[in-house]
Amino acid sequence: MKTAFLFAGQGSQKVGMAKEFYDTFTVSQKRMDGLQCDYDLKRLCFEGPQDQLDDTAYAQSAIVAASLTILEALKEKGIQADGCAGLSLGEYTALCAAQSFDPQTAIDIVRQRGILMAQALPAGTTGMAAVLGLDENAIQEVCQIVTRSNQILEIANYNCPGQIVVTGHKEAIEQATPLLLEKGARRVLPLSVSGAFHSSLLIPASEKLEAVLRTKHFALPKIPVYHNISGQVESIQQEEDLIQILKKQICQSVRFEQTIRQMIKDGFDTFVEIGPGKSLSGFVRKVSKDVQVYTINTVQDLEGMVETWNR
Image 1 (cartoon, rainbow, N blue to C red):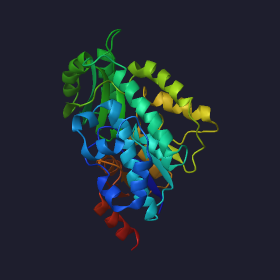
Image 2 (tube, helix red, strand yellow):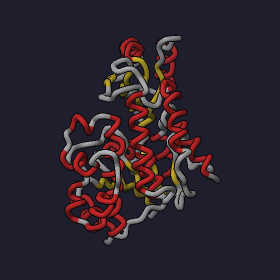
Image 3 (cartoon, helix red, strand yellow):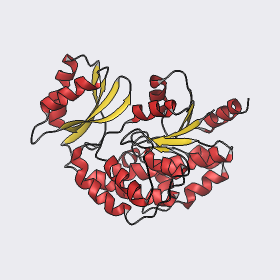
């Protein structure tokens, strides 16, 4: 058995996330209580309010804190990863799991990352939409048709077969929607996000993030981390390599489907989604039905997994 940990990205947040683990496991309690931020992380994760939790400036640090709190419980149960990956924001938790940087460093970075992404674009002018049931080439053709000097539309996420997310100006999304449907898309669903994440519009924000990253220190990952920008294990020989990867990540496509395919090719047969939500488990199952998938966002989930693990 070769096990991969997968970590949730933004959009998975919900009031009460990780509270059950905090209440059940001393190690989880210590992890959450030990994380410092300029707002009350624990209260926001456990009590909300939801509208603040949905705010990109707060959501990112809260999700990482919740995911790290759950991760401690798995470690106490003796469940270890041979490799890991995350969807967008989740890549930071994956790097923590790989001991590339410590949990507090992750919180410090993603708090600033969330603020930078929240402030990057004028409110209400950009967005994202999930395109269901249409192949990449057809989507790229439509993106090229609607993209002009003052309007852009690009692919943000390759989530799984039949689900690709586009990102850009709202006007471009509106113009693209009937064209995508004409080409055979089953549905085009606008996403509840505050901006055109993973687009070239975030290049200025990526440069500001680079400045934040340069104030931190990282170690080389102890286990393989598969990165969003390529779906591969990137060569990281020094801090600068990781800085450039994370800088590119917020303004380039998230290649999650390619990540899962590469991990399966590399021998991973067991995938464990850690954190709020269960989207990643669904994506993995759409890529392959021949792998074992676990979703861990409740203590019951963890106990069920441990029971299966020990058979």
